[in-house]
Image (tube, rainbow, N blue to C red; front, side, top):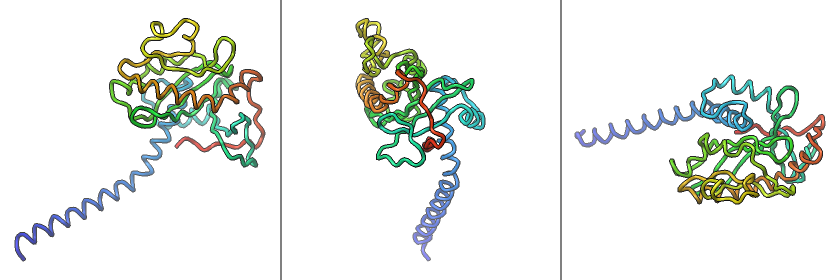
Length: 245
């Protein structure tokens, strides 16, 4: 057998062994990766309501325990009605309820918005008054680091706390991202409905603003219920939504 043939056989065998090892590693790590992704989603839900601090590391068991004790995920329809396990509507929306001291303190809406380079995923929390934002978190995006990627940083997300999704007359107006600082770019009566924009990332702000408006509009019936009637009445057999994945 010539040296050339031996070299080819050796290289082929090495490639096969490496491929097999990579496949085994990917398969073996899949469950671990799924678990990490689940804990990360739970952490972001808790972060949106201020139950954990952004940027701080927590043991996975601590996150899971806190999520289990304080978050309830229910299913609602597009009219804001809590669904029972027997219901079979065309559209089911997940809604997370945050409980503390035996009471519902906030509700959390999942965010799935277009960004400049891909989808933006996160959570937006609102107070039980149905209008005041209590927190915002982002767990996945494809925006440019240092520009649109600033959406994942604390300074940007904290801008949302205390902002309103309705105007002074109680009409739904959503929450928007300004082109620059709210203080300089937005007139006084609109400031409660805007957050500071990101310098050099106008398109990210534009797409996220539109995405948040679409999502909040979809969930507006349940927000109206909170504004007018307070806490949702949960049937004993309320349909539990799928956990974040």
